Length: 320
Length: 263
Image 1 (cartoon, rainbow over the protein chains, first blue to last red):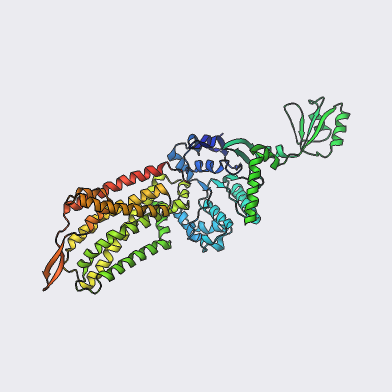
Image 2: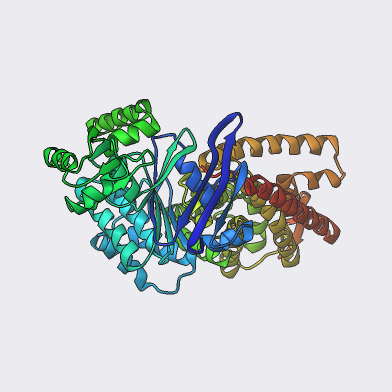
């Protein structure tokens, strides 16, 4: 597709005999907010490091803005911004000095941009504070400010809301949405918590044990996880017309076996059954499907991994 | 690469450790000077230049090591170097940028520590007769290359081990081993000049420190003078080996860094 700006093809990373990323392939299209979701240790950071050139892939290739070789990829990366693992910050320097060093290193002429980005992340009044005195959340914000310094076309963010309080999470989410909608920044964002990304992403890559287990759009995910009625009848071919013409229902999908997944008015089972009967269609199955995002995630990446992540999060909160 | 250099210089100029090392190195020098020659009858520029050379050759490698470890390994430890690569700077530029800053800073440090006190003392007490200005100049200029070679060696160690603390610890051990090896070589190959080129420290010491002293008579009194001036050929050989070392350590360091997975 012409709007594909980043492609990973069979990216693999092996440390000795341990394969941490296995044959990962995906495409990122312009304007996407793609969530890389998986439990801790699934390989999310390694994938991002390979995209950023920090880790050399054992095999596989990538293409960013049409560039494939190392020289071209380095040039492409200058149009991107990353925040991987530790946010950019020299601990003994102030926020302003850190941004100024980053500005010099990126060769940006506009000094005023520093104030702009610090304001965007809510650190305008903390510019003269030494970073070692920052909270984890403030460091994350500073990292995001650093990532926004160049007005990038793609942002690659590794767990950017890690350590933020709920208010901070909302602020960062709104900021990323704003960047995506107003400045058309494409975002690849990772998290081990699907719920964090569900209000943000347009697409998801689910990863487990270094492998992409599902590449799905947010709409499809919503549809899959949404509460719906599965209706099967003795005359499946007629059913869609009856639902549409007699009941005025439009939000449904016809499955391969002819059954229908109905996403609206799911509470009106009696009315739907009655209408079908009246039109000489006998329902053989009407079943309420109510899987939620969390269940779906657990099924995909495995209960054990998610459970382990949750325990880790709880103990981290307790410690905090 | 130019941007990496600018950013590094900005960072160093705002780092307190930069000034602490400079102050400490100057303080050590002043203490040495106070203990050795302050108030002596022979206090003058040439006497100071000769007497301080030994002190420089012992202390300078440590300061060079500290600065190089901070510049090359400091940003690897806290992962801020990662962001240079992430912003599209090629590894060769990240590497060369740091190497150039390390060489610049250590050369500047050497010049400041060598020249400033000597010039001040010369301005106050005159130059004297211990050693001619040309010999001291030749020694200092030629010694800059072994110092650069040392810088490259510590840079190579920094790019391999990624931690300033580890680099310093290893640097001290290696410096100590090199000193022992220097003594051993001196004993084994007494009078032969070739072995000095193998070790940066030995190379630097040979170029910097006059060996043969004696007494001469000037201004109606006996004064200590340097009998053997540094031969131009020795200086050139020392500089050449310094350059060769710079290239070898530079290439080895880059080979270690080129395909390294950044933590």
